[in-house]
Length: 246
Image (cartoon, rainbow, N blue to C red; front, side, top):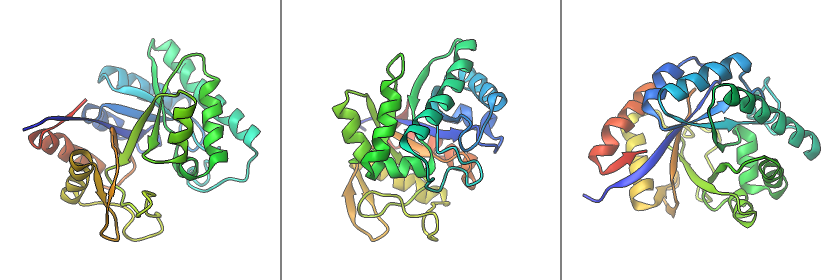
């Protein structure tokens, strides 16, 4: 059987408190750095866990909107948003320096992630932040997104991300969380969803269409229902289906 390789990532440090269970099951993590959740203490704890389990460390900055968990568009100027994102990432970098650890990637959170996928203004904000950094980092982005195109134009290394626990529309946007079918909660359905994307390079949308997609890293939301059980299923079943987690 031909073997595929996939990275499994999870959003962590968001106040759920399940990182000690998640870390042995994933290969990269996205650490909330104060915008929508998290603080110096949680970042420090999660970084130490990631180091212990040899998990690649990413920053998970967002709109500075803890009240809405960064999941709503915020009325903020580009300049103010750039300043906030730089501050969030700097706080995590400070902890990484103390722990002698390296920042592997950046993945925007929530509404900012979704907006950057389709809106050039917000995509350029993130590009500007990454270009200002002292050393290159990867950027986790959706396939065929505005931010993916701009990142490549600016010679920023990208990793295409898809979601294990979310359903897709025909334009490769995620089904809104306000819809009943937005989130995949059944572990067997999730497994088939992931296998189809990774091995066939296609995703079955909620309308029943099959749309091309590339996935180099698969996200499982750390605050999702039954997340530990679902990631354990991925760990157990992907390898027997010819997909290695790395």
